[in-house]
Amino acid sequence: MEKNVPKKILITGGAGFIGSHVVRRFVAKYSNYKICNLDALTYAGNLENLKDIEQEPNYTFVKGDITEQDFVNNLFAQNLFDGVIHLAAESHVDRSITDPLSFVKTNVLGTVNLLNASLELAKSNPNFLFYHISTDEVYGSLGKDGFFTEKTAYNPNSPYSASKASSDHFVRAYGETYGLPYIISNCSNNYGPNQFPEKLIPLFINNIIQNKPLPVYGDGNYTRDWLYVKDHARAIDLIFHKGQKRETYNVGGFNEWKNIELTKLLCRLMDKKLDREEGTSEKLITFVKDRPGHDLRYAIDASKINQELGWEPSVTFEEGLKKTIYWYFDNQEWLNHVTSGDYLEYYKKQYQA
Ligand code: NAD
Ligand code: TYD
Image (cartoon, rainbow, N blue to C red; front, side, top):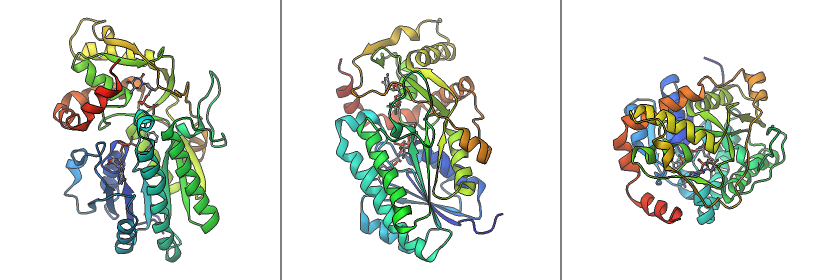
């Protein structure tokens, strides 16, 4: 065990998709740490994601909202965390288009509340670290060529990415202005178990299971760089422990897919899994009206984290997609549970066309 490593760690948003994988990894790997998971349990947060570790002695869960300043300050004062890994956020672009203010509240105000509380702890703890988890969407859209590097200028196009860009700027500003030790990482699109079925891959898996249309936005020629969520959790672990303070790391899958090609691959894998004749699921593809402000292409140049920290993705896309499909099949109860309630209302409104 290294000297001076933080022992009491706050992970925000740990009941969500990526956060649950980060919490599980840290709880399993660092039995000498105390891991506190702070989550408001919005529609996207679900404690079923952490059922297997909830009894572990190094794990606690606190239900609470990062937008509530007094609550955040009290939690920090009571627990004297050595580090924060901040994932709590509103994370879905389509929701940000219909309700931008919720994104400002959670992603900007919530982050600044955490920064203020962190400053207090950092005053008496030189090893304190605020690690902010962000997205490649802050860089805006690429054309057909090129990659996002850590030096690419921010140019967010959606209310979601604007709110994440703003939170990144606040984190950096707290480093410059008040000397808060921080790291930021910007990652490409994640997929895998526990992802709420409103994002492309789990939505389409769920719809294929239920024989519902697959709403492909526009012409489907939009490109994303996909990374298996456990590879992201491994990158977060590495960056938290070995990353340089005041630095940014881009994390990506070296794995670009046009939405339409990805959808067809998913359809083929699902036909096999469901024992359906090849081509059956593809018939569900329905081109629908485009997302406003839709970014054409994201692609990460992850050579900095590769060269400095030795990280690279370990799960191939086909392998990761198969694992993901199997997980959703084995967890139909989870799917039924998370898709009851307001999700259905939202979904109906969004895709009436
Ligand atoms: P998610 O929507 O699955 O989970 C977000 C979690 O935050 C939920 O558990 C939710 O309950 C919690 N939360 C929301 N508002 C809160 C509040 N006010 N107070 C406390 N908790 C609150 O999101 P995700 O996909 O797991 O993303 C996690 C982080 O990673 C986000 O910051 C996101 O911007 C970033 N990110 C996501 C991706 C991706 O592909 N999903 C890629 C790069 C970066
Ligand atoms: P999404 O999973 O929402 O992630 P992000 O917008 O953060 O990249 O969308 C991934 C891509 O898939 C994006 O180009 C939008 C597209 N998309 C569809 O075509 N249909 C859908 O129903 C969804 C949810 C997304």
